Image 1 (cartoon, rainbow, N blue to C red):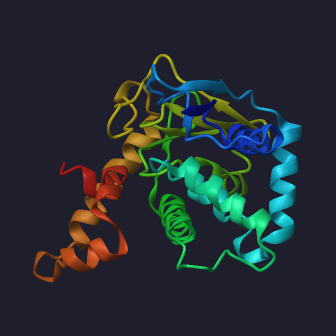
Image 2 (image 1 turned 180 degrees about the vertical axis):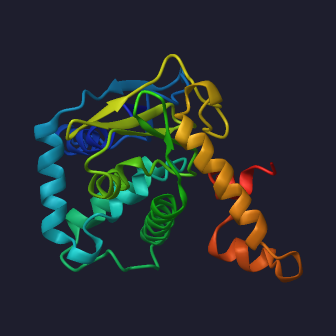
Length: 257
């Protein structure tokens, strides 16, 4: 039994696919080093991420996939679904072997699963773009902490860069402990060692909030309370438009003061 171990990145996974073909050796499993559980009875091969090798695999896939589905594997990868690596490997095996298109062959359980996962990830990214709120800190940074089901920050940063191009902001994934900082027209992936925010809700500590931001949140909560007519309250409709798990990002809903 042989296991391929990679660094947990999509580039690393594509490199692993390249190594499978290069070594003519298809493993029993491909596992991320972040979640790897040592198996004493397995032969382990450590894959070193290589941009050139990954690009060769990705370029080959792009030639065989339609424009509509050419990012499907990347979106599905961001789901972090257990076993996603082997599903993607098996997809590549069919993709490179068969002459006819396979991306819509939903009789194949891997194709169906990858397609469904990619759609779930896209939906999650769209909800993040719609529902999150940034908080203004005293040092001029706009901060937003999120805990999405899937690793969707890569699919949202362009939206926020375009929308807040003249501001410094940080979008931080609380669950995965990393974020993207936009400052002076540059994007940078960051990890925060000293957290000035709640690790579950992403709310910035009051002592680091900008004073006008505190006033804004107070006014907005008051406005929301006054227009929210109790007799017309429809929680089912509200949840359809905005899932409950996003409420904690909103000062008008998350706080009762």
